Structures are given as C-alpha cells and as structure tokens.
Figure 1 (cartoon, each protein chain N blue to C red):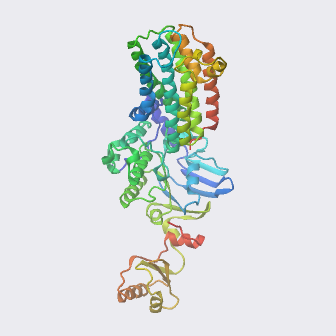
Figure 2: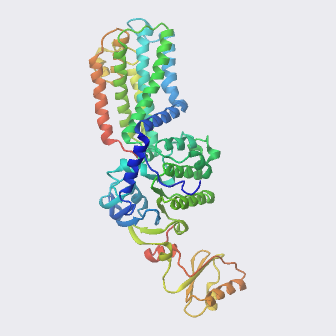
Figure 3: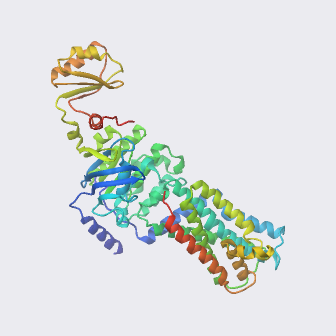
Length: 255
Length: 325
C-alpha cells in the first residue's frame, strides 16, 4: 500500500450492480445456512413425498398429488418469504448488520429490493424442486401458469411484508419464536396442505382471510381445478401486503 | 462512458464545500428522554486532518458521531458534513463517508471475512483492491473464517477495512482500538496515519489519552455532552506555568523523602498507583535531583516525561475527574 493508496475517490456503484451484489451475497449466505435450508427446502419436499405415499390426512377431492403440490408450493412460499426472511432480518437487526448497511452506499429501498430478489430466487428453486418431484409422482397441473405466478408474487409480497414488520419491531428472539409459531399455526390451521373444504364450515371465512389460506386455496383453485385467477384470494393477499408493508415502513427500527 | 460521467459527477460534488471544514458541529443538542447526551457541543474538523473526540464513557462522543453519520437527528444545533446536512443528504453522503461502528459492530456473522470485504467493495465505484488491504491488516489467515469466529481484534480490523475500502473522503471511527491487543492497535494507528497522509479526513472517538496524543491533529475534549477544551495535543498539554517531571515506578515510593531532596516550592504527588508527578520550577537541576534520588533508592523511572502535562492531566484539571479506564 503506497502513498496515494487511500486518496479519496468516493462513489457508489451503479444501482443495478449494488442490487446484484447484495442479492448474490444474501443468497450465498442463505444457501450456507443449514437450518434455513431445512425449513425452506427439506420440510416441503419431505411433506410432499410422505403425504403422497401415505395419505394420513384425507385431502378430499381429486388425486392426492394434484391437491398436495399447490399446497406444498404455498408452504414453500410461506417458509421462504415469511419465516426465513423474518428470522434472518431479525438477527441482522440485532447484530447491527442493518445499522451498518444503513451507512453503505446501498439505499434502503435497494436493500429491500435485494431481499425480494433473494426470496424470489430461492422460491424459484423450491418451485422447480417441488414441481419436478410432483411431476414424477404424477402431478399434472391445470389452469394458467400466469395466474399461479400472480398468486405466488402477491403471496410473497404479503408474507414478506409481515416478516419485515415482525423483524423490524420485535426483539430477534421474539421474532424467531413468533415466526416459527405462526409457521406451524398456519401450516396446521391455515388450509395450507389440507384443503379448506376439510375444515369445519364456520372457520372457512377466517382461514380464507389468512395469507396462507388465501394463497394455498388460490393455488389449488388454479392448479388443481383449472379455475381462472381467483380475485378474492389476490385481494386478501394484497390487503395483507399493503397493511403490513405500511406498518413496517412506519414502525421498522433499524436497531 | 457512463462510468466516466459518473466519476465526474462525483468530483463535482467533492468540489462543493472543499473550502470549508469537512465537519462542522455548532451547538449540537441531543436528548434521550431526560438524559442529555449532547449539550451544546461544537467543533470543526478541517480537511485532511485527524480529529479525536476524547472523553470518558457516556460523555456524548458516540451520540455526536452518530449524528454526523446520519443515524440520529439533532434536537438543536447545526451539523454539516462535507457541507451537507447528514439527516437529509444521507444518500449523497453515504458513499463519501466510511464508518466503523463501536466494537466493530454490524459485521454479518455468517459471512467469511474477505467475502464480506469483497462484497462491500462492490457497492463502491472505485474501491481499494481487496487483496493488499487484507494483507495490510493481517486478515489473510482469516480469509475463510466466518465473522462470528473472528477474535475481537480481527473483527475490529475487518470493520476498519470496511470503513476505508470505498475510498471515502471522511472516515469516522468510533472507539477504533478500545480493548484491543497491541498488534491491532498498532495496525490501526498506522492505517490512520496513512489515511491522513493521503488526504483523508478522520474523525475518531477515544477514551485513550495516548491514542489521542499519538494520532490527532486536533483533540476535542468532551465531558457530559460539552466540549471542555480543544486544540492540538501540544497546545493542550503546554502551559500550566511551572513544569513537571513525571515517571512511573513501583507504587508507594517514599514521596516525602523525594520531596525533601527537592528545592523549595516543588511538589511530589503519586497521581495514580505507581505514577508520580513532580511539579515545580523546571530546570536541569530539578531533573537531576529526581533521577539522583531514584538512583539512590534503586528505582528505575520509566515513562519519564519532562515539562509537559499529559492530556490526562488536562482532563483532570478541567473536570476534576479521571478519564476512567
């Protein structure tokens, strides 16, 4: 390091390069984290294989795998965009990582965008994994792929907004506990794997209003029953996204 | 072509305010509930200088630098960094200011050390080469070590690397060497000296006297949210009329016997266990008397300093209290 090495030459990299760098960095860390991978990839795949082989729960209508796969895709979205994102962000906040990033050239919106890119990239891996496995097990999706894509995107926005709201307002340990609790509660009670029709009638409206219920039922409507895009489900997910997103923007604390 | 126009735009921004101070803090007030962290604090930092905010824990140093970094809003007073309001102009200031948080906080625990440094370098337009910086700060052996497994010193050196890798105009270091091993301390001091040599402005906080004396062009002594003195280390430690001879030796020496050997009006004091201060009219005879007395008593005085007060004394004189650990 010679004279002049440190001579100031400041400047932010172009936004696109910062975004790509941050997303690649986050994705690399995510893929290195065993617990997160277990949550986001292994659990959905195991559930799919186990329930397709041994139908311990009565899934009702249609072939088991046709009902299962959309639900497992919804579960994958929930585990990546909600549980995994909430826990990771909660601990980033606790360790001051967000505080440090706040003085880096990457703007806050850029950090958010990088996180969304990371989540979507991991979801793509999950969908390929679950879809491919489902195909091998005899899954033949109905409906418009575009409609399913819309549901996944709006669902991701809803879950991610909820995740950031929790991570930005609760202590890291509370986020960890709450994110796992909500994951299990929605998995069991949110019509994720077991279709809404198998739940008691009086609960339908409530479950359908949860992001998990809306996403899973919406995906089953499209992929299992070949219906057009269910606007009610999109509406529920968009409402969650807007409400939690607004609250997170207002109450998120960087430290 | 795009890169060129970007860097020209950047240079244009640099030009603004190049005449004035890099940091200007005037009457800063910051409260947390009933606690007043900064109570009308004022100082400036000129371009290319090293400024040390020196004071005990809780004096308001971190609050002050965090206002300059844009983390906190001042309740009152004027704060300008590179001519801009850090609470509003964060986006244009961030690439120009390198920050190291206290205790090297904010390093992604699961990232590997060099991976993190490489990543942060990518967020900048003209970063330093990562390899030489890694070598320079002695981090090469930790290349594949996760941040959470680094020692305190390694972590601090990595945090320092992150603060300078973007080639900023201003580097803000909060307690850069607190509680560190001598090797890391030395590496940090050398780096700060090189930054200054190359025209980077440095603002650092410390409660270590020797650090402030060693590194700073300008020392701002802060106590209870106020500036109690500021100036070059030499100016701050000069004065006081009579001179002093200070030295370290085993504690509880017989100061009465030393006093008896000295000329009239001279005073001897054990200011801290094992730390002695002889004050009086300073001449060669006074020094000779002190060292002769030491020789007679089989005492080897070390850290012998003649004629100037230390910043420690300055702080003690101004506040009536020690700086603490």
